[in-house]
Image (cartoon, rainbow, N blue to C red; front, side, top):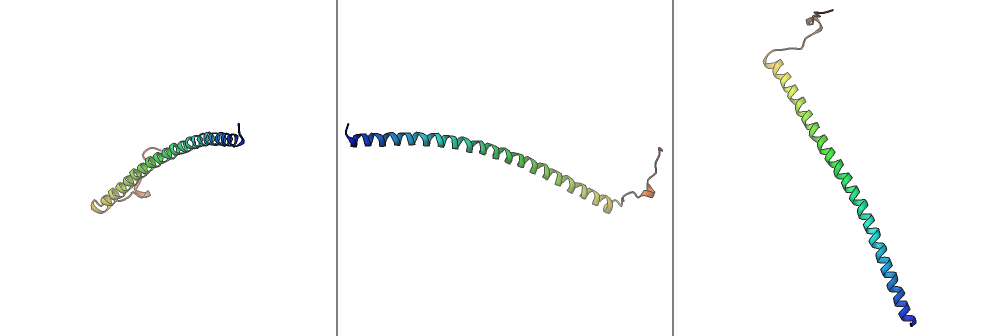
Length: 90
């Protein structure tokens, strides 16, 4: 074999080996990123659930406040004081 042919063969071998290593690296990188994507999607889903729960709680508190306002303003109800409370059982 001539020296030029050996040089091209070595260059081809290095190119194929480098390409194979790049495929292995990119596959590993893709798997890591995919795992991170699934973790972030799970966190986003948890955040959506918490947001829904907080909205429900806010609406419940708003309804309670609205009910209290109607009771005190429209119906003339008031909160009981200590003097209004009687203990029936000791």
